[in-house]
Length: 345
Image 1 (tube, rainbow, N blue to C red):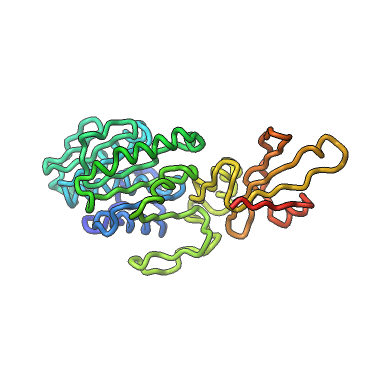
Image 2: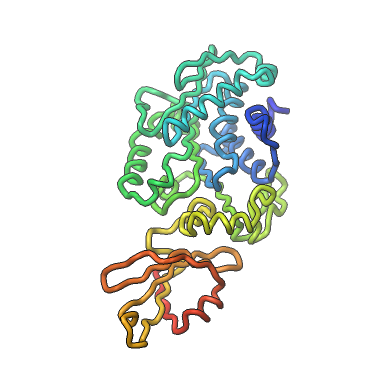
């Protein structure tokens, strides 16, 4: 079972690597595993995975998948690129720990790992190489390339950093494939901004995307290969046993709704803009200094609720950040009478 079904192997990998943590299965892990299995079978050769933090996407894509592929095809060369050296080293260590575990050796007795810094090499010619976007990839060919969280949230609002990652990808990645038609590229990440690598790749042809927001914005069904049944309804959390709607609401208040919409909902919007619209309240007219000021509120649409994302108050050319309350549409209109609406998109 574990030799033939990568989805089952991914569950085993978590249990072997995290012995002190109880594994909590969810349909999203099956969907993720199925998408990655399609890459191994070459049904998909270009895959983007957008999921919230702590969804097991790195364990499945960057650690378990390479270990399983090298178990069934020990001549495969897999290039694993993580956003920074610490993450690359952590994934390398966990992959080595998994592939030298007695249970793994029992499943794949022909696999003997020769470890060196950033490299797990097999006698059959296969290898898992750990790199970062700042590391040299010249001269390194691969049958499968996995890019995991190439940017940090802190870089999301830095146009130069976003441009640097896009340029790095265009100059380095596709060229590394040993077979341009059968070679696989997987990008697994949370969304960070409207200018991140996901946005860049979606402008190109041939990409398939698995995008699972923390809170469903519509009814979601399993793929036909997994039965096609209803997975969750609009408004339901992705993995409610781990994070229910109340947990997610608190998380949004902690991190700010703009970051939440990107990292958790996989629906980023540009700084100071959102496709849902910019709503300007009518200026005050009470004869005080406030009458020279106006406010703009930026919204994001989540199921059944309208959240105030960002609220700024302007005085001629200057803006300063204000509080970010959360309330229903009706309550907001009641509190801010005389609202004028200017659509941005």
